Length: 322
Image (cartoon, rainbow, N blue to C red; front, side, top):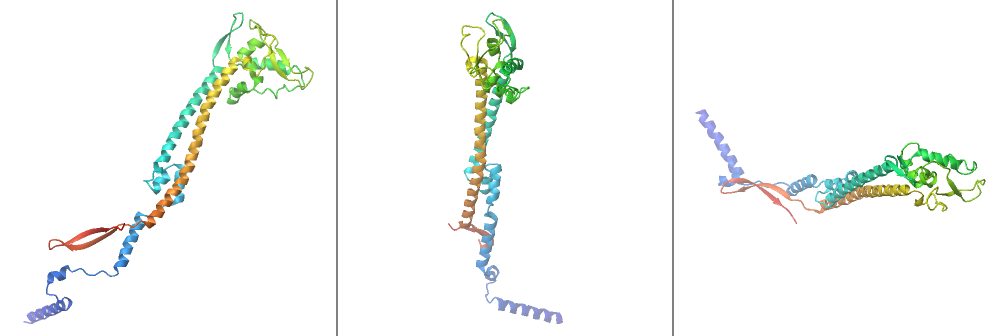
């Protein structure tokens, strides 16, 4: 009996509490009624700020510039993948690298050709009486033989060991000198067998042409008379191509190689400019992205409950001001 009375009292108290909390008799309405949010403006602003912070964080312009200076286009990709310069700078980079490699290879090939032409190709040279002489187009022993004679004409002139300084090995400097300086013309085969040999190819003293007395230290060598042929009384300047057609061909071949290297150098300069321009443009792209990220209105995501066919259903909504 006491238990029945106790249960009745508890039920009465519970019913009283329900009556005080919800006077409405519609229990469904009470169950599904949404409680009002406290401080909705603050919650919305927090959600919005979080979205901006995650999706629209500012990019570092210094990092973007450094990336693009090292690898053109990478800084633009970091800041804004949709920027057109993200793809222009890498395209220029690849084109320049291709041009640099191509013309460098062409220059190397033509360098090998003129080096082989001068000192790596054994040829047969015919003299005027039909004698066949074999040798390389340029040989140091011929050069050394004739320059010693010129050095001995006057011991007080400029022609000494300091004037003749041809490299003893086939260096780049050696190949430059035998084409650039006239006083290294003695080593070319066609000069030697025309100005320092008879019609059969036997050595004879060169016939020197100078611009003053031989005993004057200021006297300079200006050319030579040929030893044989129809023009033995006409002096030939050592800087003239008539002195050696082989030297002329060598100079032309070397200039072709230099032209290829010059083109490669242009691509190198464009590469350097591309890196610099890419770095500057990366700063521009980054600043534009940061400026737009502040002014853009982000989509606002909201989750709420709604009645759908008499059932409480969670809903996802999005609000975007534009």
